[in-house]
Length: 102
Image (cartoon, rainbow, N blue to C red; front, top):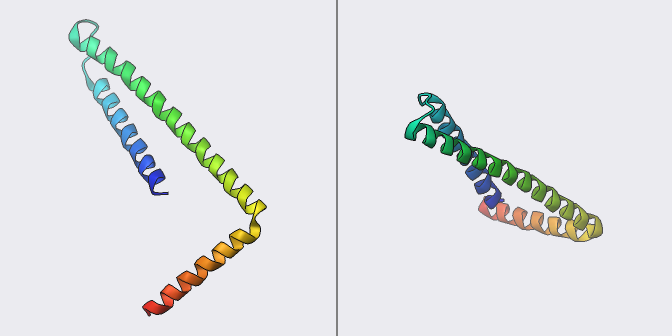
């Protein structure tokens, strides 16, 4: 779960960087010649590629979460008593821990 939060945060930070650079490029003066035009065109292509990769990463992440959810659901359906026993054991342990702290 922690890894997914870190991945989500990283994706958002990368999206923020891409949006900021797009904003900076839009603010640059319009020119069709010289190194500024070449830089702007190259940066635009790379930003487009980065945005495409980020979108693909997001789609892959969503698909992976769905697959894990399906696997968990399948396990629960195949082994309901094991899940109930595990949840009961966790509840017991948490109850004992909370009881000793008061």
